[in-house]
Image (cartoon, rainbow, N blue to C red; front, side, top):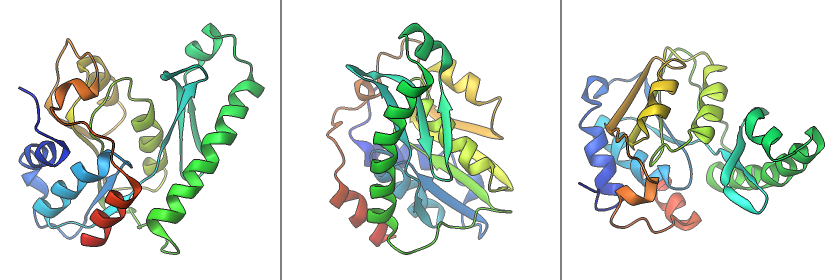
Length: 210
């Protein structure tokens, strides 16, 4: 069964997170853009604050769907060395991709947060939400960045994720919650009837509403 859209997926996901309902030490960190509509539903159900947590995938030039790695706030950079070596990418080649994506990361942080400082996750339950996990490159960068901020508990929550990726991430965080873990994954968009791109304006509206 496929989700109707990201909001529908978020409501299904929230139903699996009721252990964190109405706790004052929980914060939902949503990966823009697609993770924000999902995270909005989770935060609304749990009565928790919703915070944008921009992460940028490092796509292989010419084959952007293939992840070299990802970057996250705080100077976090996660690189898939095997992919870089297979593509014949040197450190300087990777640096060039990082430079481009770093500018977009900074733009998103300014657009979504403005002058507000990042939420303090120290000693709190940080639930990191996206609309799905394929390779998990972006989520891994987010996990490294959030872990450095000393959360009480680090939870990854997604509506759908490749079983192998979820199993791998489960070794890096306190808990992974997924509505569906198909072994025949295909792609994140396959599991949504409506997987239209989420716009910057939609992200800002949802963040303002919380």
